[in-house]
Length: 585
Image 1 (spheres, rainbow, N blue to C red):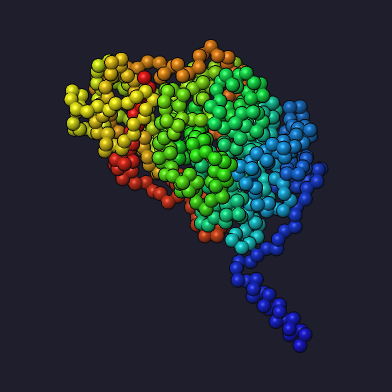
Image 2 (cartoon, one colour; image 1 turned 30 degrees about the vertical axis):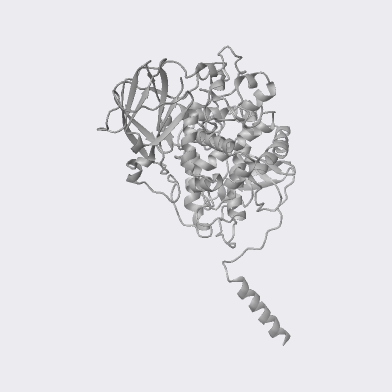
């Protein structure tokens, strides 16, 4: 009888356990001690198969970090010392962890030790072929958050290291790996910002997988928004290590008079300016919501900074809402902002031109945290040369003729023109639209005013020069949520005169102001000049890991935002094309 009852109880327990897919027992907390050897799968070419194990020695253990160095790393002079590895662990505890978790939340802790593994490995160096003008500075791979055996809501990923971790570049002054020299000085300057960048990626995936338990494929935030949030994490380190703060309209004078603030800028923020410049130099050809590129990253970072400043209140709450979300991309922005993202993106596009240029500009057309027109001309590279002769926004002088302009989705072009005193100019967007050049109403704007209409309301626009003449900027914006979308428009101008020099120069600080001290402005640590290595890694995650998450399906690279597809209506719908006119003088 006793034996029968035991067997019955065992049968009931077994039946209960089989209702879902097999569930692995909760693993014990994994401890690490300095000097121990551990092995990790570094294969970034496959999520779960064909592991490439490397052995690492634990160099430092702190409250929040486990720093491990690959035993096969380059050695000798010019490589990281034991003390420097300890320094990275301490900095992670004291700076990176509190800054990033206070704004984005804490990771799940799948290995139950409360720490993040930072693996410095030559495997990262190996990702850059010989002689390239780009390199991978570090990365996070979502596969390491997946269990190695089936668990409720997850299918096993045998190649997972099943730990919160990321992988970091190591100094290689002799070019041992692929002939590419990596100096220790550069890596010492760049590593902490990369740690913050990758930590945001880790938190984003971890909280979506385990806290929000996002279903389908939304556990993995779309690349352009995910990268923008990681660049925000870098910026936040700069605020944390100085007296700088958002919404201060920080200018070159502020930075040049404080060594601490200047150091924080070059350490954590200069690369955001460099990426943004890649966008500003060709705004109509780049997309904020496009595939991963330097320009997209710079634009998305600046838009997120603009959005946080405009929304007001606790920006940490905004960042957290974008992470703790069951949707992604444009839908995620819509939920977090409580507004239509394309309307805010259009206002941001206008602010790229209007910020710190003309008096009386509405706050929604201003960039509250940074005075970009002041800072860009005063940046110098590590060789002491001025990097940008002026604010690098590409503008086009509108002439008395027709011209075609192609605009990427979520972006704008900037066309400047003047109207002579007592004169009138006509800007025609539609062939056959009635002329207003000699008679009819004209648009009247004060200096700093912005007038916005949809394409069907902007067939023909006329503007008067008044008694002293006036200057304007015509800004067409393509409000498409289709990342690959592009729209060609034909603009015909009559009665315009050229404009020269910067708009409203009185609002731009004198070039005689002190230049910022030499900094490593153009150094791009871990970013590619095209949709390169990291984009392929994210594609691999989406394709190989999505089927292993509850409700997920196999998918290819996320070039298009989820829930959208290319639509011919995007390039014909007049509501998708919006025109803003700004009077600057």
